[in-house]
Image (cartoon, rainbow, N blue to C red; front, side, top):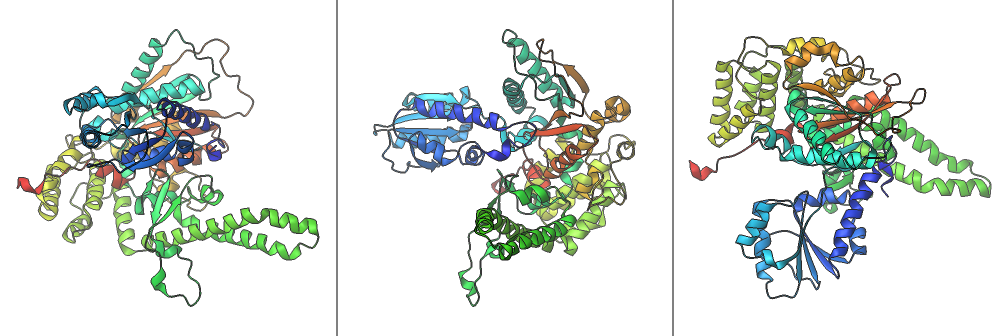
Length: 598
């Protein structure tokens, strides 16, 4: 039981248990000893659903990573491939099976999240389809990451929707939401903004009509579903996140709830010990609300983290000092019983102090400050219509390409496109400095609306910024009173829309909504009689906010802040196709022409 998933208003353990039950049922179909061959990308998401102990209970004896060549030897009856429906993976599987052709093993394949006819056809062409006894699908759409956070970890969702016009991810989203409603009741109200949001809502309503005979008799847990397209707010993911969790992700990358950190900061050096014995393996830490201290500091602006850690250190130190006051046997026994918790707290404090020091080295550097200054100038509308000298200097110094692309895209978004002359200049400088193979990437960014020529003389961004109060001077970082603290002044547009929807409602910002891409809409789903909630005095409403195309940790922090506000009357659960930051998001849109083409 993952206890941290059941702390919140919605018990997400129910979803995790449903996924585990389905996995157990599939494993039991393959009688006898088993080896699993993993598509490497799936190991992280599956780790959040089932640990090795669960697999072991169902006779899984070996686990391998899917790679070409011969399968490692294993004395098992069944070989099960857990894979995404990708054609290139089918070729590897075919080679694996072919090389074990004379063995008496049974082969099975489990597609995640959907079975694919194209993939089966490829296996048939390779002459191995008949070798598989079971071909099945494991519908892993929404994975619980924390007590208020669900992700599909569908890394190409934004790219597919906006570059390739492929709506597969939207279908998976709709299916995931139907699964959610089967477990937590029909969501009575659906709001949305954007073309993808409209598609998902239409698919959900169609699926509901198809299952019209089977009425869902569960009392609804969610009051509202809000579907938001990522392209409604392209600015937020490009900005540098300034919360503790956001900065960990920006600098080190959080993958499936884990972060890998430089090991030297965490070495337990004993006095007089030589430094040559320092570990070389990265320090891997799990990050979620099961850890008390992390739950307390992760959503704070980084400038408020030092004071929080110092306060915690004093509390822990005082708790350990209590041992001197324990006189009676009963008091000593009580102190000893608290010891494991206190030691865990001390270890947690040491880890987060080390992480904070690592981050501080970066955030106090001149390079970080200069970059942030330019970002904030763009957000406030300063000189967005001409070539930026800082960006020019960064290109001349050959700074990382992703840093350049984030800044240029940010300038374009804040200016509703760049003048053709400015855009051509940036493109020329980037291609001449970083190589012409990046021409595809620039084309992709233009297709996705991130880097585009100005088509009309009117820039709507200043109007949107003023109407929605997207820039707050003197944001209070220590004791915030507004969501803008997560970017030290900038309030994420996506979260402002969510906040306004709750109160006073979107009718108050009709003009701004028309300036943003895609339609906005409202749908109601009929509930069976007797399932209408009778709200208690002072009881909060629960909204599921679904980001189509990715969400950042800073946006999640802003939604948690809204949930905790005493007068908000609303609690938010967050769902997304993928947890992203500016770097991973831009990377997902990058393409390179092989150098051999030149």
